[in-house]
Amino acid sequence: MDNLQQLRREYSGKALSDNLGFQNPIAFFENWLTEAIGSGCMEPNAMNLATASTNGNPHSRMVLLKGIENNGFVFYSNYNSSKGLQLAENFNAALLFYWPELFRQVRIEGQVGKISANASDLYFYSRPDESRISAVISPQSKTIASRSWLEEQWEAAKNNIEATSRPEHWGGYSLQPISVEFWQGRPNRLHDRILFTIIGESWTTQRLAP
Image (cartoon, rainbow, N blue to C red; front, side):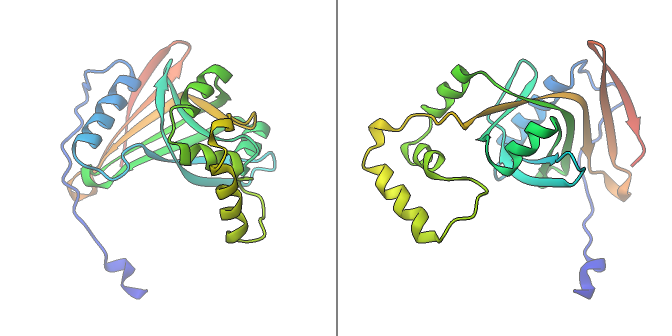
C-alpha cells in the first residue's frame, strides 16, 4: 500500500463566508442536510457516533439520523448494545457527518439522553415489519451461535408479526449539542472551518485554521 501517500484530490467546495447568515447552527445544519439529500449523496443521514466507556476507551460506529427534535439529533438503537451500555456509563458523545460529494463534514459534540417511550413507540411502529422483527430478535452486540441461529429467530418471529411490540430495551436517543463545527473542503487545502459553541443559551461563532 505504498501508493496511499500519492492519493490526492483537490477540493472545490464553495466558500463559507465569515457572515454565515445563521445565528443557530441547527438551522445551518438542516440547510446542509437538505443540500446533501438533494445532491444525491448516498445515505445523507448516516453519521458516525463516537462514545467512550468510563475507562476512557473510545468506540465508534455508523448510525442513522432519524430526526432533529428540540435541537437534538435523534437516533435509535438497542439500549443493551455496546453503544447503549457505554452511553449509560458516559453520556458524552460525538457525531460526524461526511458528504464527500459536497466536500463537507460536520462534527457535533454533546450529551446524549433517551427520548420518551411514546416517541420511541411512534417511530418503532412506523418501521417496516422486517425492521421491527430484527429489532426484537437481535441481542445486539452479544455473541451468537451462528448466522443460521439468527435467521431461525427471524423466521419464527415473522410468523407472529401481529404480536411484535417494541421491546423495552429498544428506543431512541437524542444528542443535545454543545458544539457544532462545519468543515468545507476548499482548494489548496485552505479549508473553511466554522465552529459554533453554546454558552448559556446563546451560540458563539469562531473561524478555525484548516
